[in-house]
Length: 416
Image 1 (cartoon, rainbow, N blue to C red):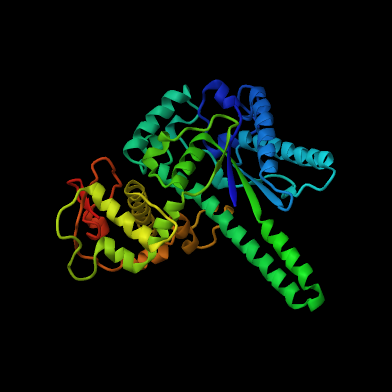
Image 2: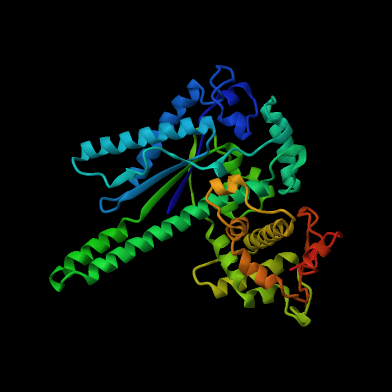
């Protein structure tokens, strides 16, 4: 499954250097410099057309003769993204039709749905008290400065990096679930056909199944906004949210092919196993995890090596482990804190995005939340091998919050 992140084209809000980040202002069709809301500028529409053509060429060039490219376009409901998605949709369909005519054969690619699907979780990051203010770059910089110190901050009433991460990655994860279900249904259909066919058709069935296997090339185009896509990229790379401005940003109408960092997925799944959890955090009785003091960097390297030994095909570094595990545990505790709040539950936005239970919501907030909760209900007790400095990362978690699981304290150190 392939994901394309596509930032909307230059907008009337960009033209005025104005922050338009609320759902109310971003979706309206009145007001703004032209009385039509804050959709694309004429420059933006043109640059999206050009960029969409290059994307169409990329997808078609990446699809072999025996493959079938299924393309879905998901978009934020803001006016500027809806208009961007509509242009992408038009250009993709035109490119596929033209390619078919030139090749004089059917092109194995199609765009699903009559129009792009609106997903509320792909909306712009909300910038609080800076809404509708100018100049946007100066105001954005103030927020980004706070992001570097704490990805969970809500200074100026803004939506935190952590909150944006949850909803944006939730869309990606939901698409992956949907794709797995589709493939399972397809496999079941093939199996049913296979059992109901006579032996004379065995070779034909095998050929059909082989073609089907080659045809699992699904593309999902995510049409969204600068900060939302920047934060999503950061999460998919396995970096903590405070680093999101360290990535090369997407310009207006720019697209990028992205995938999950495989080390991130590996570390998450590795962390779910109780044996590995105990290795990092100790067992119910006091456990000496090392015989001598080593540096923090060496400690992360040791943990990474354990993962590499346990999961073939991975070569996780200590730095990658350092980025994955603290971010994951912070995400877990944020989800846990939310679940313990009086009155926590599903919102209208949750329901609109397909979340039907608290269990599903918590799983979106933190991968494998229930499994993590089972592990953290224990009270690991370890003499840490390594003390990790936490001065530069403020997760708003104290030792009381976590029950001493990680030896985090206000003095700025925490045990592995």
